[in-house]
Image (cartoon, rainbow, N blue to C red; front, top):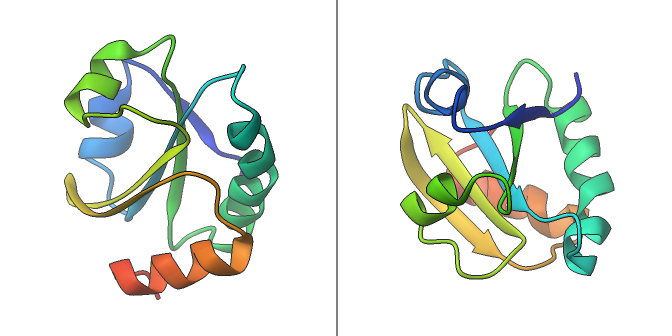
Length: 108
């Protein structure tokens, strides 16, 4: 399953009301670290299918979401369960580091 693109219209349904835990990637098309992280986010979405919902939010197109989560630097990753942030990280992460973070935040 590929990542789900989230915007102001589907944010509540796809993220805040999600039944699965959510990994939200806030990114921008012009951001080099975001581009480096994109294939890792895609791999996580494939490997954690059925256990984790992976969504992407374009910070330039959704400033309201970025403001809600106080995003000042990108890429910004948020791990949410039941609409509540359980963990976050700003910057690039190697896949192994991201998987460690997911375990710390409660993803099995």
